[in-house]
Length: 365
Image (tube, rainbow, N blue to C red; front, side):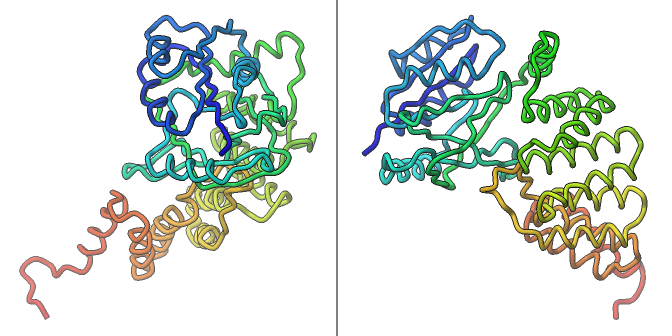
């Protein structure tokens, strides 16, 4: 059986590190912890799981830190986790099964990363990440922030997922600060970095600048297709925030040049049209979203609700506004099949039930 080195970079993670390491320890033959300047009990917690603890001076470069961590791993495969990640029991078992059949004929294992959840714990945001990498293949992390390793070689896809369970807010300005530092130093941003820089600007509500960077990124046409599609959707978000819904629609439609429409984009078109009180047109796009196919292994950022629950509940709204309460109720029931405890579905259900109830004091038929 192949060996696995879990290689992590950490800083002040005493609140979550033990949970992470305990969940992943059965998979790892070696644990490497690179500390970038902790002042809490992080090192003591790490010491309960490994003697392989190293210091690394933080330099506002995540790739540099991760490459250093990978340099200390000696296993056949190198695995990375963030301290607030966890392997749920079912996923740990799946990873163990992957490990049992893994050979050196595989260069890289891609696995889902679940990073946001609904009230029932179902993923709201998921995408595939490079998770296990053959050490001798010499993979290197790229990017000072939003670092990644471009998938290459012989790739295995698994449905064994890593769950991101953030317990406390991080520094909301860190990523933007790193990008700005690069720009101030005259360092040109690679296409992928431009995409993420624009997203950080959007998160900071600098919608005009975000739109300008996204437009430039798309004009250069050097980005990865999934980043291009996501950039179109974020450009739409910017235009909406700037009060320009027609440009937002155009940005969504522009994404169709890259591939078949994603349900995420179709739902955004429906949202824009519904916001303009155009329920008939919005319903058209929500129906298309219900028929769209998910492409998780493409590496896209996937919003699972956009493929079933969200268009269903929004079609309920559309048909109610059009005065077709029977069809509206049908779509609400469809939404309920996907999320039977969702407050919006239950609220709508009570509304439709009230329409059927006899008026107080009237005789029942």
